Length: 186
Image (cartoon, rainbow, N blue to C red; front, top):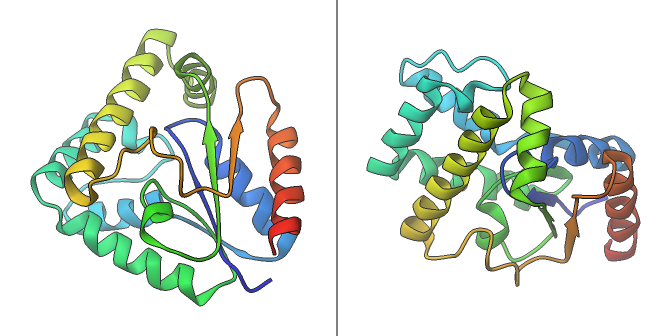
């Protein structure tokens, strides 16, 4: 497969799980835009190890730095665009679907309650903590991307080839729907 695929959606909606499933199915390379950004955070002196780092005090501090200096996000997006355009990738990214014109773009949507439950289970935290974190991350990233690129993250889904509501589906069901769609679009 020569096209690249980008998976986007709000925090804790299942992007990584679906992206890894597609990468395995179609023998593509998987890349998390968030992981690349965490490497950039390490360069700034943050200890950004761990899947739940974004939800920590340091993760929120780095988000504040990004809000004050768009250099991090612009550099990340330039790198992701170049990799995406090479083809053969499955990338999770909040911004990439609005920044590229080719490939396959999939939006995973879900209720805030569903994301809260996923994060609570995944990161072993209280429902209240998970709710606050997912809400804060979504709202702050949405404002950041509006300021940087003037698109409405979470509201403008016109750029996507497929939109899946994950609320009442298992991870495998979402992966199966995306596989079927990718086969049709390639």
